[in-house]
Image 1 (cartoon, rainbow, N blue to C red):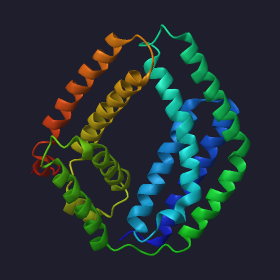
Image 2 (image 1 turned 45 degrees about the vertical axis):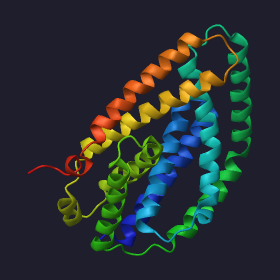
Image 3 (image 1 turned 90 degrees about the vertical axis):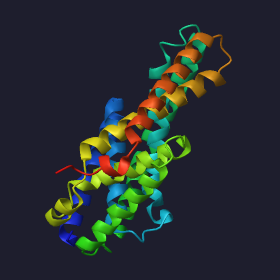
Amino acid sequence: MINRKSQLKFITKRWDEIDFHLHSFCETKDQEELHKARVTMKKMFAFFKLVAPKLKRKEVGPIRKLFKHAGEIRDLHIRMKRLQDSISSSKKYYDDLHEELISLTEQFCIKIDKWLKEAKKCVDNISKDFENVKNDDVKEFYNKRLKRIATAFYDTDNEIEWHACRKRIKVLLYNYDKLPGPVNRKLKLNTNYLDELQDKIGKWHDSEINADAIAALDLDIKKDLIKFKKQTLVLSKAVKLMATDFNNKVLMQP
């Protein structure tokens, strides 16, 4: 059983981490602090799915707003970092992105205390309704999501489902170390396999986004576009190979 006391302890610790990392980001403009805050928010969302399954999307609205605005800054930074070696011919393009990054960051940090206050109130409202979660409910949570992932990977050519599968896998991994011993022993998940699979999907997805971003630019960078498309194809094949026979690979072998 995951008791209410342990749930409150986990959420309190995660919230303190989010508050610390976001204030650190606004003080230092260190992108790693923003990344840590967003990862912690993802862990919080994953935990809510496990312990508060009836929670509606609108009930976590203020937290999602914080996550969304932090993500806009993070995504812009990553786009600049990943494409800078490919598009050296367009200094103006990078100057424009840099100005946009500065503007987004300034707006974010001006509003950060207000957004954190709203999000904290949301977290407190959700936490007060926590109840003990039975082992059978935890097992059902995992089995249901594993079944959905396995169904999506039954046809490994169905790339449309891959990103959604990665999100489901990360929810399972984020929560796994908090499972009661009896549940953990019963599930016997191969977490190394799941982590490697979600990592490969993530790299494939990033490469595909890079290719699309380059194709959308009005620049003479055909060589770079071809490079990213080839890279995406290689990564796609790696995901298909690893996702094949998912049901057997996801369980620890005796």
